[in-house]
Amino acid sequence: MSASIIDGKAIAAKRREQIATEAKAFTEKTGVKPHLAAILVGDDPASAVYVRNKQRACEQANIQSTLHRLTAETTQSQLLDLIAECNAAADVHGILVQLPLPSHIEEKAVLDAVIATKDVDAFHPENVGLIVQNRPRFLPCTPAGVQILLEESGTETAGKHAVVLGRSEIVGKPMAILLMQRGPLANATVTVCHSRTENLAEITRTADILIAAIGKPKFVTQDMVKPGATVIDVGTNRVDGKLVGDVDFEPIKEIATAITPVPGGVGPMTIAMLLRNTLTAAQLATA
Ligand code: NAP
Image 1 (tube, rainbow, N blue to C red):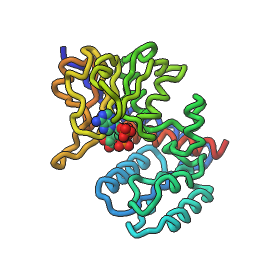
Image 2: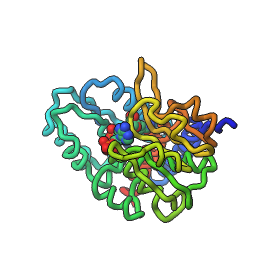
Image 3: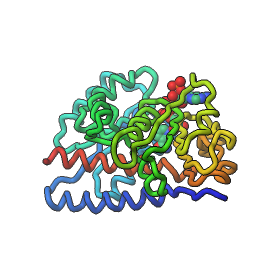
Image 4: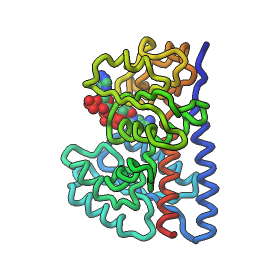
């Protein structure tokens, strides 16, 4: 049996079309165009590509985007000044600070400075609190995108054992929270594993849904996967210039029921959810 490949690119394209239609209708009704301000500090080529992709996706979704490109020498205080400007700008609905930031800038201070109502990445403590309490303002982009992939692949989550590899603030932790909530695409029994987990493979082998977000190429091998599981690969690692996931795709696709590829799996969904949050921010600002 070979797994069905979850086509994140196609699923994200469908969602983006829906968002484009909604954004157009919103602008026709209110005269307001949703607007995302993206901030890129330094000249990391991968970050530049990510930001460009997000901007292109905005255009296609009838969302305005503005790129603020700052040099690697920008001070934390200069960056905070720009964020304060974007916070105050009535025509800006969402603010995205592309990570990673140069090492002389404290990431938490910068992310906390984005006003919660424009925090379309859902990193602000207020937004994280709302997510934990199951009354989200914005959805965490990558985890919410994974939930949609599970839905579209016909993977039942209720009552199933979901194992999340990784406990980062951006992926692992919010992923686990979404899946354990009471509600649709959730109600799972969730185990979170990290670098201090003992007997990792024993745990992953009990997963009906295995979500890998650790940032280590092909870390998850076939012997770590229960036959019939759904496997979601969040990892994006550059190996010899090629994008490789955290999952050893070829052998695992022979035993899984459904699996995401890298690229073309989770990545496109993350962008679609960012667009969704930007539209939500504009709707909340004009409500
Ligand atoms: P991160 O902040 O580096 O966190 C990695 C997590 O993996 C940590 O919790 C770490 O445990 C755990 N880990 C590391 N080595 C491990 C091991 N040997 N065994 C078990 N757990 C281990 O990374 P992240 O931001 O969550 O990103 C993870 C991956 O997803 C990266 O490849 C990133 O590029 C990718 N990503 C993709 C998207 C997308 O849209 N496709 C979005 C975000 C991230 P400790 O906490 O104990 O250190």
